[in-house]
Length: 402
Image (cartoon, rainbow, N blue to C red; front, side, top):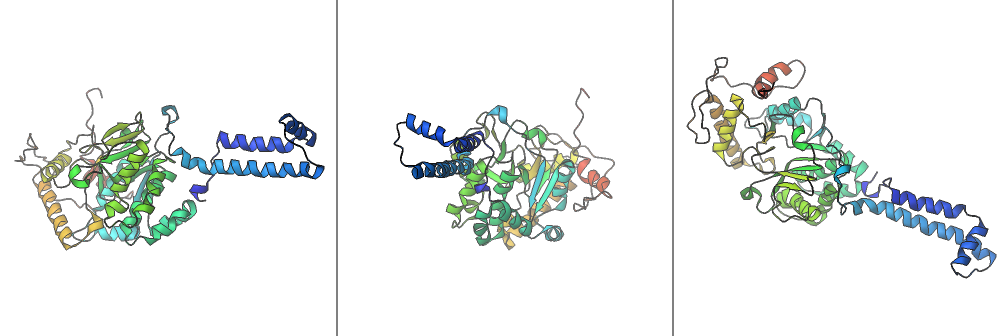
C-alpha cells in the first residue's frame, strides 16, 4: 500500500465516519426536524430524499481527506514524551548488488569493506533482526509501501543515490538501526538509543561543511515524521551534482532543520525534550575523524588492548567512501589500511603517539607478528574464533561492584 495514501486509525477520522453513519441512520422525519430548527428552507419530497446521499457524500469526502492528510499533518505535530516508543531491534544494511557481491568485494585487495566489521555488529546484536537490502528487495519494498517514489528512485544515475534514498523509507516503515557496511561495532548500541525517538550522528565541520550530521548511522522508532520530511526533499534535490547534496547528509540536515527548527549546522545534543539525539564526534559511531590518523592509530591500539571507551562509543565508521571509488581513492585506502595494520602490529610495544599516554603491555598469549584473518564467515561453526578475533578485546571489563 502507498504510505502517502494509508489511512491511519485516528479518533478524528473515526468521529467523522460515525457522524456520517449517525446522520444517515436518522429517519426522514428527524432530518426534516433538524433542517427546520436550523431555519433551512424545505423543498418538495424529491428534494428532501435527495439531500441524504448528498450530505453523506460530502461528509465522506471530508472524512477521507482528513484521514489521508493526517500523516502529512503529523510532520508538524510534536511528539509527547509519554507516547514515546522504543526503537525496535532491527539492524538494516544496504548493498544494492546483493549479499554475494558484497562478500566477493570483501575478498578483493584493497577492499572498501572488511567483512569482520559487519560481523562484529552482528555479534554484538545477535538477538536483533537483521535485514539486508539489495536492488531487488529494495524496489519491491518501495513498490509495495511507497510506490509514489519508485520512479524517482529508479531514475537516479548511480547506486549510492539509490542506497541513500532507500534509508529514510526503511526508517519510516520499520524503524530500527541503519549502519553502513564499513561500520565496526564495539558493543551493543541499545544503551545509546534509550529515551530517544530518533538518534543521529554528528560529523566534523571540515567533512560536511554546514550540514552537521551524516547518514552512516541512523536509528528511529517506526513512522516518525522526520523521515517523510527527508524523503519529500528528494524531488527538489534530484538534479544536484554532488551526492552529498542530492540524497546524502546535506538533505538529511535540511530535513532535521525543517522538522525540529534547528539552525545549520545541526548542533549535537538533545532536541525537543530528548526526542532527537545527535551524538557528537568521538561518540556513538564516529570514534575518530577520518583524516585524523593519530586518533585512528590510537583507536586501533586501544581496540587490541581492550581499552575501548565504552561509555561513549558503540563502534566506529571507517569512512571508506565507496561512492567515490577511483585509483587515487584506492591508493589512499591501501595506505590507510597499511597504517592501521602497522598500528596493530606495534600494539604490544610502547607507543610514541602523543594521543596514547600509557604504553600498552605485551600480551604473552599473542604473537605480535601474527595478523588475524579479518574476514571470517559468521556461522555457528566459527563464532568462537570470531569472538576471539573481535570479541576477546571487546568484552566490557567488570565494574568494581561485579
